[in-house]
Length: 303
Image 1: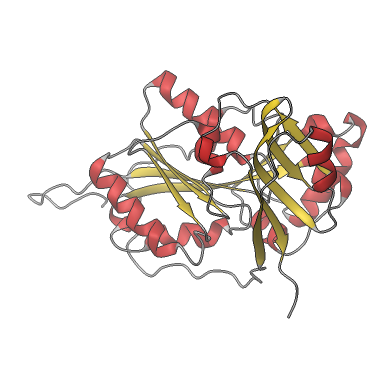
Image 2 (image 1 turned 45 degrees about the horizontal axis):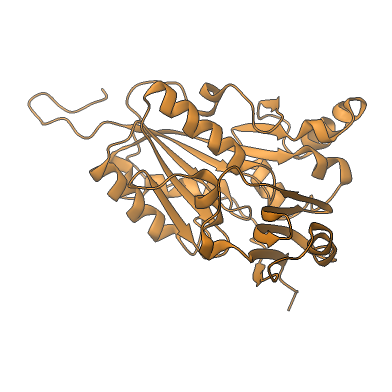
């Protein structure tokens, strides 16, 4: 029998949780932007916890959200170094906001299953309801066969739902082949295609099956190898051309770059994913403190 016994006070309501994961540059932040906009339109209170690898707070500037409903955990990974911070943040948000939904956007190197294990820890286990791990996959990365090992595999195999994103970057004739490649890694999780994270957002949260009992032992994490990544910061001088910035970022071994630069044409959002370099005008003027600061992410050299 679920629920509290007769005569006992009811416990806190169960809040569904979404863990949104995906390798570096898969398009998670764009999907979060859609989630926040949809929630605002529908009057749904979302508490967003965003985890960046690096300490600049670039995603906060891109999402344009602040206040109690947005918390950014920087400089580590919520599935390992920052797991205690994640637990404390969940408890604080539940107490102060009591949201309708939790969304945890992990860094591009975090493992969703290990992140979900925090939902079984006290006191989060008393108020977290059903949860889902949604993993966003860059179709262009699959098509190139780039970085499809280690962390990428662990993330994909943890998915309750796979979103094959950026499908527009790949010729339609190649779609069956890249989906087959993804199915070799994870044959069972539902798979949907997307362009810029445009999906039915209700698919990202588990249906309401009523009370979800997390009492009992915490599930064990499956064995995996947690790769190490290193971050650095590049500070381009103001007034460089987009071409000069792109030339600097054409660097062997660079997995991801993200930040803002003051170019000869004005402020620009800089994003690098693999060999693809995007330099675009931001939707909103970035904070002055972030101009001329670009986070670079590479795999750590093997010792």
